[in-house]
Length: 401
Ligand SMILES: Nc1ncnc2c1ncn2[C@@H]1O[C@H](COP(=O)(O)OP(=O)(O)O)[C@@H](O)[C@H]1O
Ligand SMILES: O=C(CO)[C@H](O)[C@H](O)COP(=O)(O)O
Image 1 (cartoon, rainbow, N blue to C red):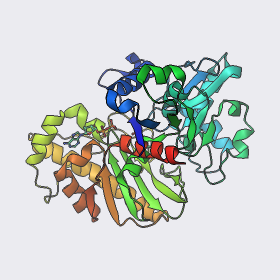
Image 2 (tube, rainbow, N blue to C red):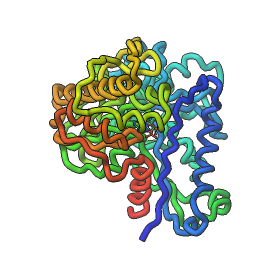
Image 3 (cartoon, rainbow, N blue to C red):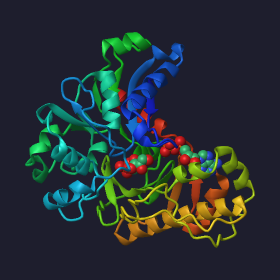
Image 4 (cartoon, rainbow, N blue to C red):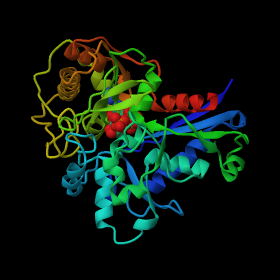
C-alpha cells in the first residue's frame, strides 16, 4: 500500500498589507514546516509527494538559482498594463484575456524588466515549492499553466504564444500527478523520506478540492468556500469566455468548467472570527430570505461571474444585529454562486445536478441550507473537504503510474 503526501500551501492575504509580507519566504517556510509535521514513524513510508497552490500566483525566477527576480504576484492581483498587448496576440475572449491572468503578469514583468531576461523562468506557486523537493527547475502542470496560455486540449502552448519573445520563460508542462523525479538527496536525508520517494506535478487549490470531493459524473459540481468562491462543474464540453471569467480546466478526458470569484471567506474573516461565525450562524433561520443585498469583496475587483476589475465591495447598510448582517452576507455570496451556475448553463456547459462543498465554509450547515434554497439544488458537504487530500490523490496517481 502506498503512503503519499499532499500539501496545500495556499497562503492568503492576512490583515497586514501584503506589501509587508515576503511571500516567497513565507511559502518556503510553510512547506518545510508542513514536512516537519509529518510524524517520524510515517516518513520512511512516504512514496510520493505533491503540492497544490493558488492558481495564477506567479513567480519569475533566476533559471540558474531558482531565486525570485521580483515580488511574486498573487492569484487575485492584476496587471492591467499588459492586458491590451495580451488581447492583441490571443484569440478573442481567451482565458489569458484577464488582467489577473498569469500571462498578463509575465508580459508586465517582461515589459518592465531591464535585466535578467535571458536567464529567467516563470513558475507558479506549486511549481516553485515542488522544485525545492526535486531540484528540476521549470516544470509545471496543465492546470497551473492554463492561465499563462497552455492549451490542455493540444497538450502544448499555442503558436501565437510560442512566437512571443518571452515564450523562453514558459515552464515545461506535464499532466497533474506525473512523476517529476526522485526527491533531492538533501531533502531525503533531512526528513527521512525513502530513497525512491518521488515528487509529482501538482495542481491548483480549487482543482485539488474538486479531486478531494471525488465527483466523477457530468453535472456534479464542487464549490470551494475558502478565502474565495471557486466553482468547478464537471462537463463533457469545454467552455472558455474571459468576458465572464469562465474557463475550463482539463480533468483526464473531461472538463472542469468554472471560475473563481473574489468573494468568499476572506470577506468573512475581515469582519468575524471563526468562533463568531460559528456562534452567529447558529442563530440564523436558513429558510428565511435575507432582505440585505451585498456584493462581499475584500477590495475593488471581481473575476467571476462578472470579470470587472473595477467592481467595488458592497457591504452596507449594516444592520444592528450581527446575526442579520452575517445572514445577509452568506445569502449574498449564495446569490453570486447561483448566478455563476446559471451563467455556466447559459454558456452551454452540462447542467448542474448537485453541488458538493469544500473549503472552510463547508462546515457551516446553516450556510449549506441557505445555498440549497438559493440555488434550488441538492447541496452537501464533501466527505473530504481539504484541498491537500486532492494533492495526495495526485501523489498517489504518480506513485502508481
Ligand atoms: N463557520 C464558518 N462559516 C463560514 N465560513 C467559515 C467558517 N469557519 C471558517 N470559515 C471561513 O473559511 C475560510 C478558510 O477556509 P480554507 O478552506 O482554509 O480557505 P483557504 O484555503 O482559501 O485559505 C476563512 O476565510 C473563514 O472565513
Ligand atoms: O481563487 C483562487 C485561490 O483560492 C484561485 O484563483 C483558484 O485556484 C481558482 O483558480 P483555478 O480555477 O485555476 O483553480
